Image 1 (cartoon, rainbow, N blue to C red):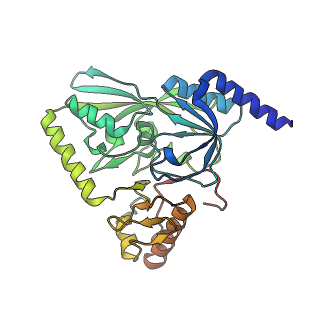
Image 2 (image 1 turned 90 degrees about the vertical axis):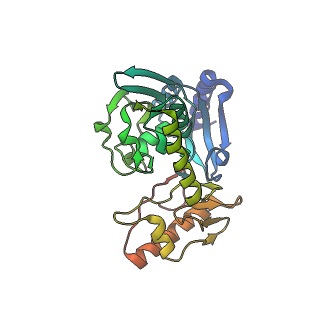
Image 3 (image 1 turned 60 degrees about the vertical axis):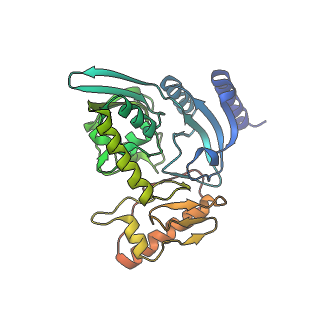
Length: 319
């Protein structure tokens, strides 16, 4: 047995002792992603609260193991070859509320489903998250990517986030410190870079009491609009960010690519910024569609679109 193998086995034993059967090796990730594609995780662990999440990332960081936190599995495309190191399935979903004068502060752990949280808030007569109805991701992913829809986004609601920093531990970031922009934050800018990332543990959201029927009407209108304009099926959500002065879906459609099929994936006929897995797609099929859309839009309109979806894992060629 070589040194590398013995070190890996020692690390795996350590994770097994802490997490028991929730730690496994060589776990297929397709069923954990909204696009239903992607290869295996070398190591895989399920965490059930923010303390366990911090324990897992600290242990991986201390042992120089690459780690990736997986939430709702949307907005990512996992390579067919899978992900090296540790994939942490974040099921930290605790939520609590406290009154703060006019407002109510909701503290949610980062693995909480954003759409479920929005529904919970509406049922309590708390406004501010109705835009999140139907968004498949988690609170943590929303904090990182400044998720938004229907004119609302995370930056309008977030007071602060508790974030674990590699080698430093947990600290609180204010809204201002996260430097929010359109589908962007200081945390989002770490994606695609070869470094140990910061990890969102929980978020504090400022909500405003409103009548439940008013909130429900607003949410139902958003849900209806989403159903009318976005396809069902297995996709990653919006593929590209909207370039300044344009809509990405319009550019892809205008380039004549609506309905384009490569392998088991196609560009949606309903909304051209959604790429759908027809059940048999590989991640490479989807990436080929991405390349075709990006290149064609650039050639025809001189616009270089930026991915909203992150490519994760072991890709054969450069992104």
